Image 1 (cartoon, rainbow, N blue to C red):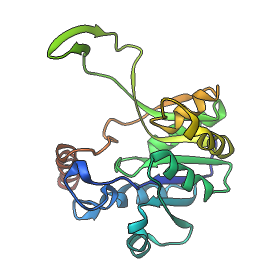
Image 2 (cartoon, rainbow, N blue to C red; image 1 turned 120 degrees about the vertical axis):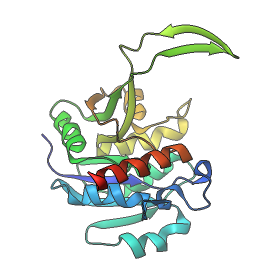
Image 3 (cartoon, rainbow, N blue to C red; image 1 turned 30 degrees about the vertical axis):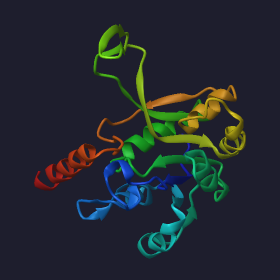
Length: 225
């Protein structure tokens, strides 16, 4: 099991779909910036060497005010997600890196550890959760065939990489069509086997106002219990 790593927290997304002018990672969640939750979790994990925060250029000073600490590096993001991941990767010299979305605030040490265990077999792995809903195709407003969900998973973060391979994949990303929607896709397109580790459904991605309300309710339930 790989024990030491750098983590790249990609926090450069906008808050437009949430209805905020503030970038998503800095939108308040139960009185704290959304980024604070995953940042603290990784900082407290015994395997974390360095935390690399990738934030919008306009938020560099805000991030320095709120998140500067020993072994924390803050770098600007790019126009595309792969550019933000590349900027974070360029700031690391570790053998292994984890890449995580700041919009998934509820990552746990158990999820991180499950992913790290995959380094004994794979050079890349992602956190996954089962698909539990019935999935159907459709056309317009007409239902189509049901899709067999037994071989499907929801792909999440964190994702584990050998840094040199991730750096090479990110270098090639601009030439790939269609563009990659996550970093593990880069490895697959380079014919590098990708493993999966079972994650936690509560480590969901906050994208809409409804997601934000769900996250608030989850935090309240933990406080009340």
